[in-house]
Length: 289
Image 1 (spheres, rainbow, N blue to C red):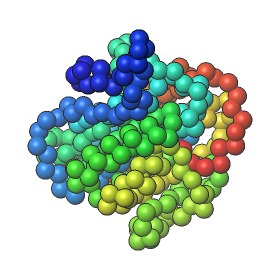
Image 2: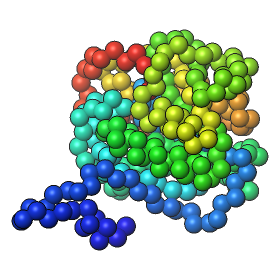
Image 3: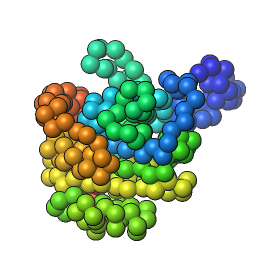
């Protein structure tokens, strides 16, 4: 990004510089090839309730070995949250430290699994999105708007948004079309009766609908952890992976999945603990995340 574009974001008032732009999202493409995808399906997960959706997408990324297509950055992505990220908890700006001890900006990562290029385990092409929660609704809308623009440009017609819930048992769903609900019922997935899906993953299904993309939200059942609402529930994440694999015809190796879950346990717990102060959080999280 050019520095002069940042400078234009400031207005000089006397001797004081004030920020003229407080909300911004921008995209960096890692794959500059002209893409011609055929009826791709998108799968989205982000930090949320018990980290279920986030872990499920990370497991799919490990299974499918997609290539990184693009990253979306935002002024609204803090490096540290002091509470549940999907509830707009207090936060601070900063970088993230990777497992290799390298620092990077928080971002939404967009991957493409394309069998023709050697990634993916099925004939169909997939767009996998590892989301990130912005700290307020305005930045969240701006980021998700950019993400759904990318999905539309790639020719995505349906997006599956993965999350968890604490009210109903079993796998539940909601969708942007009643025909999709009927389709999910054939896989034994019941319609939810809870009326909200909080954060990045819920918003992406709704905004995608406005751009002609069907949205399907799948929820594993989990339990609340008041000390840390994002403490990983790996069993619920595994259930989501197996169900989405059944729906989309993905060949998921159960042995590999168990190994990945074991490898995911320690870093997932470490990341969750390091991203926020561990302290009791007593709000009744009766929606989805």
